[in-house]
Image (spheres, one colour):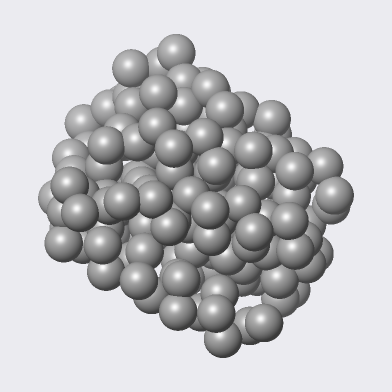
Length: 180
């Protein structure tokens, strides 16, 4: 691990400008991507959430850069506890499920399904739930049981949830109805 790069991550902030600068640094210096993923995947590292924020922006533009690390990504999915990290990681799950350049393995899909279902059930954060349900919907295109489980989970009373959560639920339920 490059200590100077680690300190760069440590000093980064949630501000979009900081995350963009770090994303662009990786695009210019891809040799540091291994260090970034090492930090992001180490949920015991107090700065892992910052690395996750940067990784999210990288994956949004160039998901193919994550592909060599997908096995490691999936291996640690269930260990994320920080809502701040889960927001980025659940969004990366969505990017991976929509990726047409490389199919996920059966084991990778299972890990994403299991973790996204857990996040959908347990999370209090709208964005984490919304990204999880969207990733599950994508995986449900190849695993019909996932869509049945998703429909059951989303059909529960969500009137106590935020407007954003309710919107995401209605959107996914509408898509589930249209895909029959």
